[in-house]
Length: 118
Ligand SMILES: [Zn+2]
Image 1 (cartoon, rainbow, N blue to C red):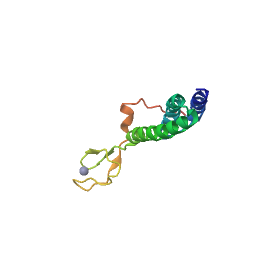
Image 2 (tube, rainbow, N blue to C red):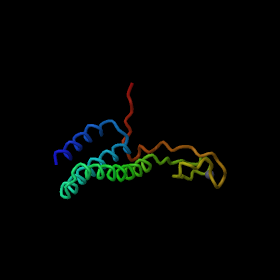
Image 3 (cartoon, rainbow, N blue to C red):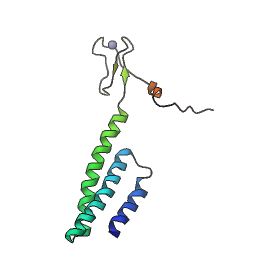
Image 4 (cartoon, protein in one colour):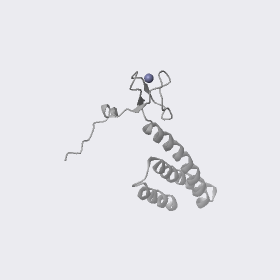
């Protein structure tokens, strides 16, 4: 069990200053390692269980974080000609009138905008 605690501790340090994906992977690895160590400990292979748990946890955590990451990064665009909004970042032109889509910058409506006063 000390091994799992150590991995959790290392994970805490690594988390600082990472992207959401890396964070998710780290959290997943730490959680997986802890779980794996418990499972492994009970079957007599603590280290092995922790490693397997860390791998599975990292993969799952990265997938979850990646999905969250993409959701946050989804660019809302709008057509300046007809004003229709599109959430698909791959779209470049309006399918209705061919107008070039522009990114919408008013996401601050939900998040208070922090203006750098200078
Ligand atoms: Zn349009």
